Amino acid sequence: MSGWKNRIAGWFIDREFFMRANGQVRFLKISAQLQRRTAFTLASVVAVWVLVTFGMAINQMTVTAQRVALSAQEAKVESAEERVARYRGSIDEVTKDLERRQEVLESLGDQYMGDLPEAEEQAPSGTADSREEEKAVKTISASVPEAAGLARVEARQIRFAEKMTKVAQARTLKAEAAIRQFGLNPAVLARQARNAQGGLYEPFFGAGKKEVRDPRFLKLAVALSRMDAMERALAAIPTAMPAASMMLSSGFGYRSDPFTGGGAMHAGLDFKGPVGTPILAAAEGKVVLAGFHGGYGNMIEIRHANGLVTRYAHLSGLNVRSGQMVERGVQIGRMGSTGRSTGSHLHFEVRQNGQAINPRKFLEVNPDVLKVQTVAGNRADSATKE
Image 1 (cartoon, rainbow, N blue to C red):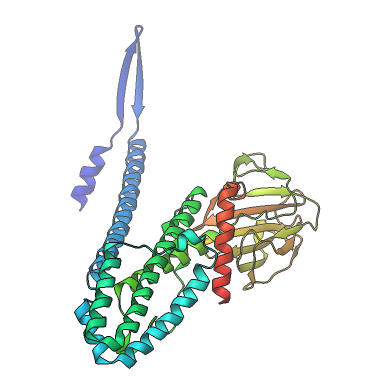
Image 2 (cartoon, rainbow, N blue to C red):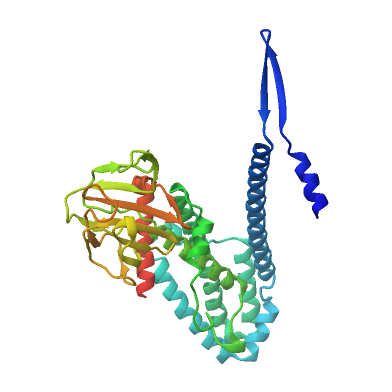
């Protein structure tokens, strides 16, 4: 071990270089310590790059594996002969299962498709899948005449599931595009939104051994889950003005410290206003801190569904308590000058994974993105209430 240390130490020794120009000779000395620091910095940058690249590769492999698994499941769609056997086995059981499935599909239609343009609600027709489904209905009707009506109902349900899947995928793409315009990564927000989930297992359709596992309905479940995560993440981005005051007194980033005059990093935006000016929640979320917090003075910290955190500091009064859920735009406190402050103002921060990011890009975003965000928020609220 000591041999390796000595060998590595031998790489970094004081080095002197001389340069001749215009008849003069100048010496340049690079110390061993400077060489070690430079090598360590470069090695750290390379290591971080390798880790990030490796993480992205793992994530891509996971997504690819999921798609391959889903494609494999899609290849296992029941053949017409298998469906004939199922109908012959117990028409009563098939009837009950189709009725349960119909109730769920109607609920999904009311929840997710009620406000969509009629053009988006048109089911695909004339495709290979639809022709295959029509063929299966004819086969079932010929083999089990008493099940002809049920076969047609099942075919309509399958077409509806395929249509719902396309709608969910389209809405997901729209939400992801809006999230990217905020400079955020949709995949990261989706993972954070899904970190806290649970509950008893209850089959989507049927129960026990009778549970339906048609891959087209599994694909619908995956699409709806992704759409829900993206729209909730989008709706929870803090875009509402945090104070009833538009006077910005200090921006985000490097500035002269108001107390020492030295250079300092300012991790948020400062909004100037009279003591008592209402302070508003920039997005819906859960209050995780409400009280005095060092240099922040009286501060409120809200954690949002997408993993983002907002902070509201130097308050003269608090209108909320820790653990309380708040909605976008409601008053949570009053402007003041508590803590490390030179006058009445609000210090507003947005943080992701503990790192402060510039709130300005959220408050000054494209109006078209805000429109998509509002629609997503309304849909998320209605889904929660149901």
